[in-house]
Image (tube, rainbow, N blue to C red; front, side):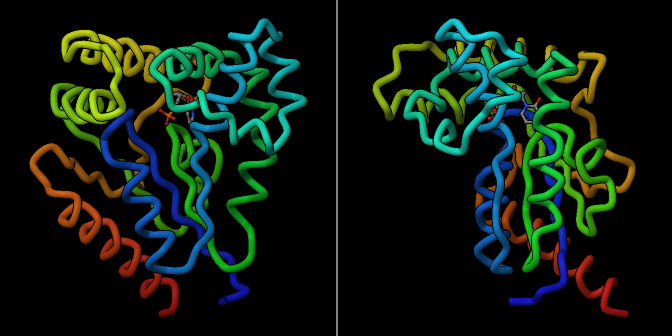
Length: 209
Ligand code: DC
């Protein structure tokens, strides 16, 4: 393991393929991976249980990330709602920045990693896809788990979350100037992973020059 930090920052909307790509990059290069959406989901779940969002973010413990409910559509919307609160975002900042600089390399995926959390990241990606394609992917995932939402409802969820995440005042989701944009709408998983890995390879080679 290289002791030199190397950070891969990946942003983009829900169900664009960020998670799959992040895990594949982490496995390929032997980097640690942080799905930063889980932090907001954990805070959202606490708020659903009656907690104050800022207190929940300030006292978040690692075991909260193991909560089995975090992947549900309800928690996703709760996460998006708490994520507009500047004090919630501030409480989660140091943990994410420390993770980004850990020895041996790190991959972080979310909405504001390239723009706010770690703009110095050596490799930056914005992974996206059309709302219709993302809704269909998410709907298939939910249906496989026995979820009762229709495709139309999932498309509406995707649109609501996109609008809230990209129109908020603090750390809105947007592609960073230095990020390579990968639109996965017409790509297979393998094609998307190959495009992402080759961008990271190119950034690593550029740094070694
Ligand atoms: O990536 P995800 O779907 O698990 O994220 C859930 C919500 O958390 C997302 O709608 C907005 C918020 N989020 C954020 O604001 N910033 C991040 N870096 C990651 C997630």
